[in-house]
Every structure is written in C-alpha cells, then in structure tokens.
Length: 208
Image (tube, rainbow, N blue to C red):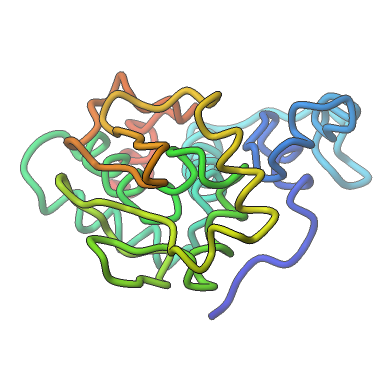
C-alpha cells in the first residue's frame, strides 16, 4: 500500500496548523510549527496570495493529511458522502471519523493517528471480538473495539493504556478502561468533531 514517507512535520508547516501527526512531540517545544511557523521550502517565507480555488485546495489537503488519507481514498469518501442523505460536508467528516485508526486514536489507545494506523496494521485490535488489521475499516454504532489480550503486555501499549483515561474522549464514544475497550455509541455530530477544516470549502472544491 502506498503511503507518505517524508517528514510529517513538513505537512503541518505547509498547512500552517498542528495536524498532531507526531503524538507527544506536537505538545512539546520541539514542534516544527512553533519553531518555524511558515511553509517549508526556499519560498516559504515569501508573500502568498491564495485564490478561491487555492483556499479550497488547502482545506481539502488539510483534511486529507489530518486523517492520513491518500488522494484516491479521499475522493472515494467524498463520493460516498455525496450519495448519502444529509449535508455532504458533515457526511464526509463522519466517514473519516468512523475509520478504525481514527477511533483507536480518539479512544486514547494511540498518541497519534499514524501510530494508531501502525498498531491496527500490526493486528493489535479486535472489532466485536474479531481481529481487524485494516486502518480504513469503517466502524458503526454498537461496535466494540478492544485491544487483543496478547498485545496488552507490550510496553508501548501498556504506556498508552495508563494514559488513556487522561485523554478527553468524545461523547459519541465510550471508554471501558477496565476491559481495555471502547464502544461506538452513535455517529458524531458536527459540533463534536474538532477537525479544524471548513468542510463546505471541500464540497465547493469537488463541485467545480
């Protein structure tokens, strides 16, 4: 599977905000956005005037990078969101939030989405009692995500579990720290999704 292998800090600097792709480092004084708050490259500090199309593109790229989704995947999510009833922008964010790697991150079982993606790929999680190693697996209300018993002794996972309860868990999820699992209660409402993107601009981008 194709994936981004360059420095993820460059992505945050390009979008001008923290995408929280490096876990704890994003909250430290080593964060690249805090140290160099301008786009990467030799022209990064020059003046830039974005067109309406340019602003729409940036919002699309920001959302794509925030969730770690490739271009074709993101376009497929948009097509599915447009087919569903309701507001297309809200549907799009709900689909992205329903990804298994995102749910693992939201439950506090990983410090970042890239780490959650790696843990899922390595088969450390169960969905309704069955092992799932596909980060893009779309969860649904009622699903129970649990850490495999064999994986609970791994030092990194033990550390994450010890700190999971200190994380703010969204209202659409329920964490059972004792059983090292979480349940999806319902689809998230737009005001419960803290993704810093203007989804309407993404809709406008694809509606050109």
